Image: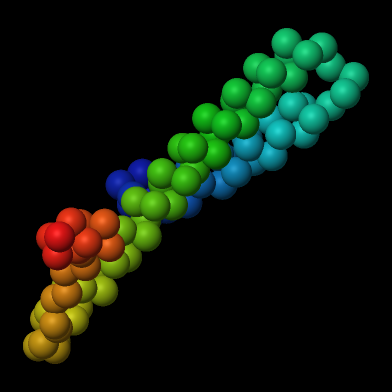
Length: 94
């Protein structure tokens, strides 16, 4: 594995975080452990899942950006739509 390839590094980190989350969850649910120990494992589980979600969200945004660039390069004209929240729209009409 090349150390400079960010995609491979990201995949390795995603795998590690998923394994950590699985281990932490199993320990957090282990009724034989003390409550304080289970709470600590649950906190580790929560942190691992938050980090994993952030990595996956970043990967998804990167994918969206790549798709958008590809569409822009191909010359496809895209209509950009601005969505206005319903509450803002009601206030504006009042």
